[in-house]
Image (cartoon, rainbow, N blue to C red; front, side):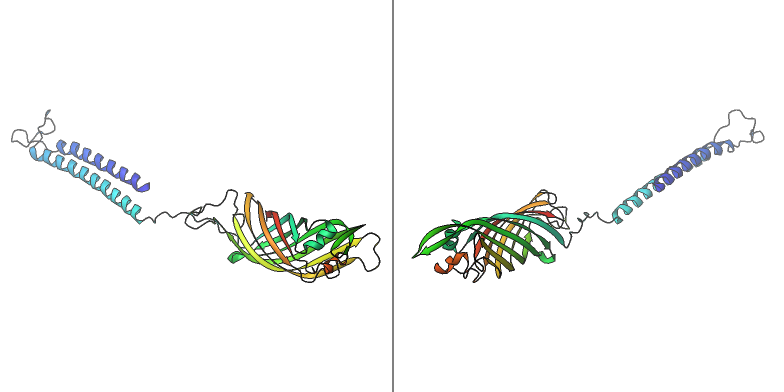
Length: 305
């Protein structure tokens, strides 16, 4: 901007100089004839000499040539500066958070492998579960989480004779509470890249840096399962309240809903060896079902922190 202003001032000054020169040169260069040499100031119509006019024209042409050269030089300088400017690069997206936290509530249904024993006591080998937990998402697409769930159902005590079940009419309640720790791998789709605001696999609407993208995951872990069976009119030692070590695997998918809110669905299989030995009113021994293995389908509603 300053260079262009100076150039315009220089060109104006040169043109003014040329005009002044053209006016001043004739005033001092009248034709010198013998008759008028002694009275140049009183001659009313002085005649300009050819050499004087030529000099004025040359001065004017030189001035305009200098102005044009100045203009061309300014243009060349501007083009050179434009060529030296570094190329414009896209602004990289903000870095993703390396670690994120999620809290979730879960609900679903579970089915027990000891089908005959549960059907004899509870009239069904499956039922609803609910619970919640927390999860930490780590670098390298790893995650770790802790969750607690609960199954509870009412039934009656029974007596089994030669495979036939007789209802004793004594109310009983079975409660199963797993506390589990899980680690695994979580792959997120549509992550942001450094080449632009979005990758070719466009993130789902409502995605948030570091967490809420569509994701699939799988993992496994260990836990502790508390098994309780209580009955009305139970004799001492008949009620059961024990804890057992469990092992599990799971897999699922998470989907963003809105900003920091998302939902997911998962399948889990749990092994709890020898947890029913002497439980369920002793029915499990008669049916030769001693493991508390189960499969569960669960829905999660989670919040990203």
